[in-house]
Amino acid sequence: MLIIGNAPLTIDDVVKVAREREKVALSPNAVERMISSRVWVDKILKSEQPIYGINTGFGELSKIYITHDKREQLQRNLILSHCTGVGERLPEDICRAIMLLSINSLSKGFSGIRPETVEGIVTLLNKDIYPMIPCKGSVGSSGDLAPLAHMAAVLLGEGMVVCGGEAVPSAQVLEAAGIAPLALGGKEGLALINGTQVMTAIAALNCYDAILLMKTADIAASLSLEALQGTQTAFDPRIAMIRPHDGQDKTAKNIIALTQKSEIVEHHADCDRVQDAYSIRCVSQVHGASKVALKHVLETVNIELNSVTDNPLVMADTGEIISGGNFHGQPVALAMDYLKIAISEIGNISERRTSRLVDRKLSDLPAFLTAYPGLNSGFMILQYTAASLVSENKVLAHPASVDSIPTSANQEDHVSMGTIAARQAKEILENVQYVLAIEILAAAQGIDFLKPARPGNGTQAVHTVVRALVPHLHEDRVLHPDIMAIRNAIRNESITNTAEQAVGMLLL
Image (cartoon, rainbow, N blue to C red; front, side, top):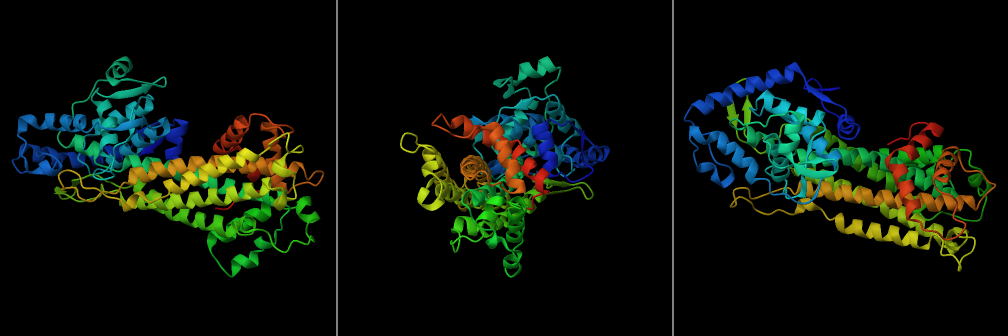
């Protein structure tokens, strides 16, 4: 059980709730904070003082005062009118993460929301009832309005939820679960949708997967170094010592650890090759730079996980209601654009290693890694697939955050596109998982041709896992299942876990 409200939320917490279905509960402190801030909202609701979002319209309509008898309808209308998302629905893990982040932000006591409304989200999450949220429609400011409205609508018995993999009306699912729809009080509709929880949920899961991806990239590169009969010289610690970027040093140490006691490397220690190609020799520089970028992204996302991105904010200690711009997703937008570039480069250099592996003029291995070229195409088209994916990534890596477009009759005249950036980063990450899976397959095939020489401690362990999932390619067969098997082994962490069991924790 994850208790929300006593300690900062971590990316690991998000993963446990989003993917492992850990249940959540609000701490007494969180409930107390929400009650304290709600007192001030209730006072304003009884007064005639116009305060944005509590007794006024929204955006450009904020100049319109809403009378007492229509304020509950105001909040309901806000949710219904903002359910305008389009496109495919967000995956289940992202929806669960969105709900968790909404609970965490609202529980901090700066949104003026009632505890029972937040408990409504907790109940849905714990009962595994999650909203159908279309993936498109947010400009990333004022927060993720449209997608969060689809989440909030479920509390009202409106909108759709996902049940058994299908989208069904929420009202019938709530009734079956014995959950009564909520009637929102003043400001509550605004508090539920005026935040960055969608882009941040995607970003948090991206970060977790990117950590795994970086380690996998070092494993793939180590396998390729051996299959291409390269040298460990470029990973001498003295090289990183005089250019002390943290990621470079750690990548070099990972490569050395993974290939330690490699008979393949030892057999070619005195060959006539002067230097390896950049895609091998510069692994520590390229992978290392992406790791440094990821660390910056992690800092930003960890801050955002525990931030309040509502507007206006309720200061319970003074009773002030302050309008600001915490809903603006620019920090997340820039971080996700940076991550897009960092991950794309991992894919770019991986594809170059695969290209060398299939080229007999560069690899000293059979053409396209098949013992019978001509009759068999071997790994020829696997490299095409990798090339296609990395080229697609180059388009997706264009920064979303450099774009902006005015909304709400120019009242909201600069927006972040942070949710677009986060979705693009997710797509790039998935593409690179496939690219690395292809490299691992190709490198494992290459290592097979170098028997009886044994790979290193880490690479041998990974090679064994690969061969348990995918047999050596003796003659052409449908290779799609092979790619999927290794890609799934990357996603479920069996590749990295195997390597780390053999050589210890890989450095990030």
